[in-house]
Image (cartoon, rainbow, N blue to C red; front, side):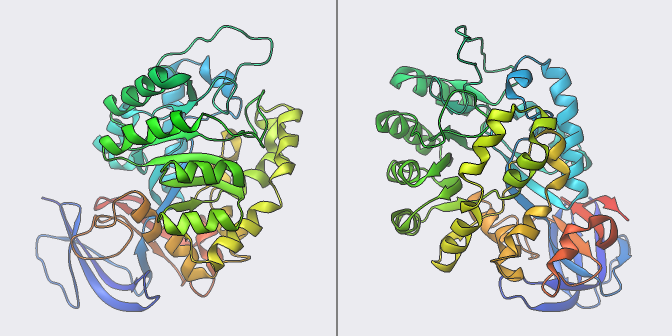
Length: 405
């Protein structure tokens, strides 16, 4: 059994914002004791010299297999090549302090299994397999002149196209059979799909209800891609667990999010990155221009939802060459969110969404030892989180030191 003692740690309680100096005993990947002057002769000991210890970060909306922003190209790439590139992307996330991430389309059980077998490869990976999309929806990457649909559940790509109850039921059950920790449904149009409109709703309510019912039967949540209030509200009424993006929400959306105890996962950095790097990353100019329809509304929606008590979770949605910009999400959100609430979005709120509230998101006895060490206090300066090469000294996942600077 591996034993590690972190000495002289300034531990951040992410619920209260209080900082307490103590030692932390980690046994077999679990935080077993937090108290002063822990002594264990067989343990590895690291003195943090008063540096700040906090939970590892969570990103609730990633695409770890998206080595390119061109999803049509991704679909036709060797799964072996995509898997190798995904490990590079995941390793980058871990080096930035993310110890758990939730994939929003593309990752599968094999990738998650490999990371579980070797902690230092990347963050703990929650996966949905392929996102479920209607024909011509946000997961259908065919151009208007392409009529053949070549897809399978094992190949690389963002989405799986399914129409009508038999097809959506089979697609949902296939992803559940393959171990999905959640389902992803495209409930509105999006930027990176070639033939849909951002303002459209997608799937009939009957189809959405069928997908949600399958997830409920398997005791897993449903994440719904949705931009407009119309799409958001119908998805919430159909029982989804979280709204991804949500840029154009309205008062009714806020009411439903709170009433149904659902989560909002904004992804602000992707819009900035798409405008600055989208064409270089593989998207057409026409697709990038769709970004302007939702760009300015993102920060307003975040502010509106936060002020009205919606539970908000950290997400980024980056693709291809944009992945290294993951921590810039903190910078953008900090314009309207105070540091403690922002840290909660990337820790305890994410843990609640993942249904892992008794495992991750806090430095607490009995929790997984998913931890980061910072040289400074992010409550006083949130930018400490955005400069890992300078301030991030340790990343510990499952009790294993994965990154040390």
